[in-house]
Image 1 (cartoon, one colour):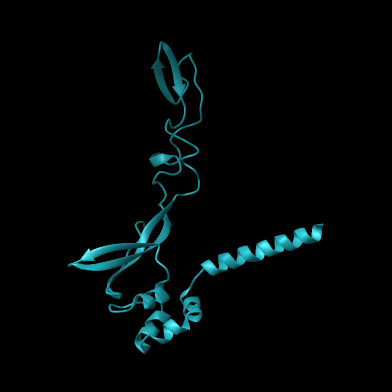
Image 2 (cartoon, helix red, strand yellow):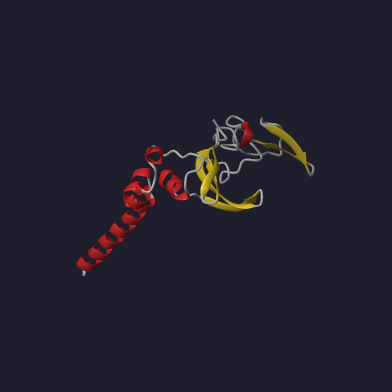
Length: 178
């Protein structure tokens, strides 16, 4: 009874590992997986693709070998001709202080919590409804929003625009937070 369970689990684990490893595509794995595309390129383009670089005039297949599959494809029109733009996205974390932790005030704005009807004990003194109370801490603190894990922010890193199946222009973009 445990033997079939073990083999099913092992098979599932191998299949999951193969799926994860297959999704990690590099220039070398794309070239070795599709040598017929690589062989159709000129020696100059083969050298560029091997280094993960592209040039104006390259084919879509050459760009795919060099940069991989894009995260977005946008169909457009430039000067009356159809175009296709590939966008490659990367992720970064926001620099410290952009909304985490504890909002824009960061650490040190607030002391704890508590209130009293006796009078001012420390913190921020407030009156409401005939009662006096003291609020300790940042009133906008939300432990679920301001976590210690910084947010992951997507940003475009590269774009390439094709016209008639050839590179018309491309850009390398600077990350938003440096």
